[in-house]
Image (cartoon, rainbow, N blue to C red):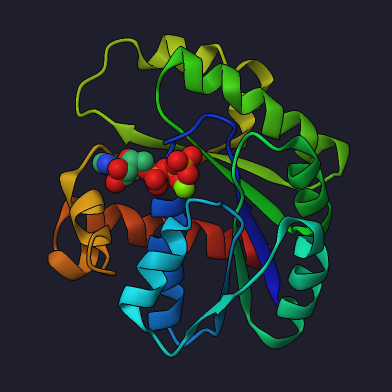
Length: 206
Ligand SMILES: Nc1ncnc2c1ncn2[C@@H]1O[C@H](COP(=O)(O)OP(=O)(O)OP(=O)(O)O)[C@@H](O)[C@H]1O
Ligand SMILES: [Mg+2]
């Protein structure tokens, strides 16, 4: 049975699609069969995947009302199922989280993002779905970062050790179906993505 990871965060633009795509490409490169479920009506993940045309990445057409059953089917055929879940629809979020093995919530280092993360944290807790918070777009120097992390309270325990910096390569690569690591495999973005992938693999294996 494949492992389902949902990327969710109520706050728009937190990095759900970007992070999901980078991990998907990394696992596909490692020979895993990866299914992608794009539940966001903006379909940016779909566009990226179509541009990429990677044989190890399978786009699954889905709709909100049948998302959970599509996830169940997908996990029978693929090693990993990655779900891009738009933020605002709480019924959809609940249905998807119930079926997920893990939820990753990208969160930019701002009070607004931290507050918005509470929605996914509490929904995940309700369904006992392990939740991890990924700090994304972290600037190189940020004196207020500790204060912002403090405002997470107990949820600080959910923070992944890996973080992604605010790097143009993430956005640039996405435009033509690539990853930041493919633009330059010795870049900081490439290192960060590999570290994140390894950390999530450890969680899956635990
Ligand atoms: N680490 C990063 N560094 C620089 N830019 C980033 C980073 N992560 C994401 N971005 C950029 O931020 C914007 C929002 O990212 P993305 O679309 O992945 O967020 P999202 O959570 O999926 O948004 P939405 O809620 O609209 O679906 C995009 O332009 C993306 O290229
Ligand atoms: Mg998105």
